[in-house]
Length: 250
Ligand code: PGA
Image (cartoon, rainbow, N blue to C red; front, side, top):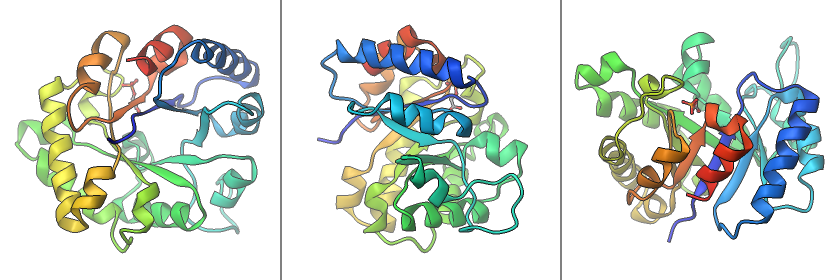
């Protein structure tokens, strides 16, 4: 059976003291739970090292929200894979729709980032998803297929065993509108079949595909019980201990 993974994407929220408070509370609450779900927290860059320190000795993992594809050099304001590794980061979110739309990241840029993360020993949480307009024009599968194909272009099956895909319909992110469990399951199944066609049944059966977009304690159980949904990438609801822990326990 595939593992379930719940990751909290904090986005541009929480300073250092807020990070310590939230992570300590999450750690204490999860200590009491017997959930087998793998848990990842993705705070801002400035809190990563502290998050790793506070979580030492627990099974909770730390991820970053972005990185650059070059190793080093004159890229003012950017962070490299090696820098993330050096503070103890294990995961990195890549291709989030906010990076694609607000910061103009293309499939090619995201592909370079995914390659760099994998070759540096970081595990990407690679995000794909359609806009409302694309869904309404019946383009969901076409858009998701091209994001998956282009984002993973030139990457071998062997390397992909460390990658998680997050399906995040753009119209559901931060809007309070969640894809119905059936809508989400349909796209998850489509992605799993696509991976099977592009690589193998074995990879496709073992690949973790998370759902993201307005996941809350009251819809998590139904979403996560779909056969092809292996947990979630949680934005807003990951900023409160109660809601995040309740989603993990779903
Ligand atoms: P949301 O964000 O849960 O606030 O909709 C999800 C995400 O952007 O990863």
